[in-house]
Image 1 (cartoon, rainbow, N blue to C red):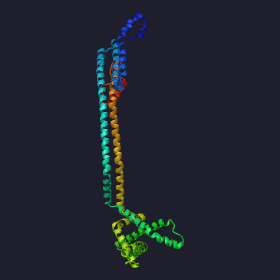
Image 2: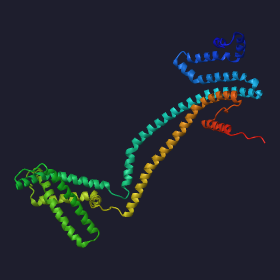
Image 3: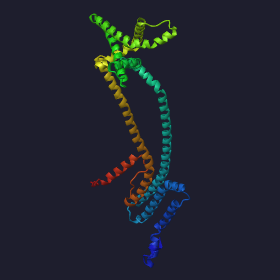
Image 4: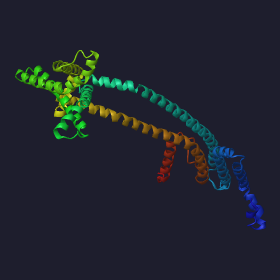
Length: 413
């Protein structure tokens, strides 16, 4: 015992006080040596290893020694001395088991963390490889989906887009060919040169005219297909007027543009007159309209007319099935990722609780062993049963024992 404490009592009582304090007088020196060993380390890494592996066992040792030595003073006043000594010895057994479980638990925790790191690295590598594979096969998959969806009944979008592209192309070509003629006509009418906005307006005008020619051709074919003979002659006359207009004002200008080349190739022996020019223009119109019509015009014109008139292209029953199928696909699109997200969240909570248990149980074993020493000293009975299987068992044990202590004792009959 420190001299400062023994000096507080009279000199004749000092020997008695030192005798009575002999069971605990050596403990402060022991704990100073233990703590100095843990604190005064050669390097930071050594100090870290000591604090992680030896701090809690050392504190348990100090607490167990204090409780054991202090219990010696209570032995003369206890009724069940043999039972008390047995429980104290079992507490030391539990303390040794708790220290062993502490070291084993820390080792298992680090092994689990390293294993998870390797698993996460493997999963990341697998995801990267799978992403690369998906990116590599994406064009083939998209092409397959487009092909599969295109060959199913529905709107022929490729024919529709090709029709629009061809009409734009013809409008650009004829705008370039007709712009000088239109400029001369406007200059002769108003006496000034053509405005710079003449070309855009001419392009829009020709684009609508070319679309109208395909619409007239579609109307003629529908009339013949439905055998509406009283309108067939009318549609034939309309189509002839359309052909005459396009041949006279569009294709004739295109033939005139290539007439110098024809004359040059024939050494000025063949000069195109009005009949040859119009015949070549008619043949050009029939060839262009025939090729474009049989390739995409007959498929792209009905969607164009339906779009402009806001009429359904497919029957209402088929449209309803399409809408239902589209909604089902939309539901499958967002439900599957949502279910995957829920499963990932549940897995994350489960693994986080498991990791929390791996990290907490080693320290709880040591703390529970220390509390058992204190409870045996105070109440002559331990509080926890060591070892713990999981974190839930610790909470259930505490709640059960607390409920047992709060319940009033029944009187003996």
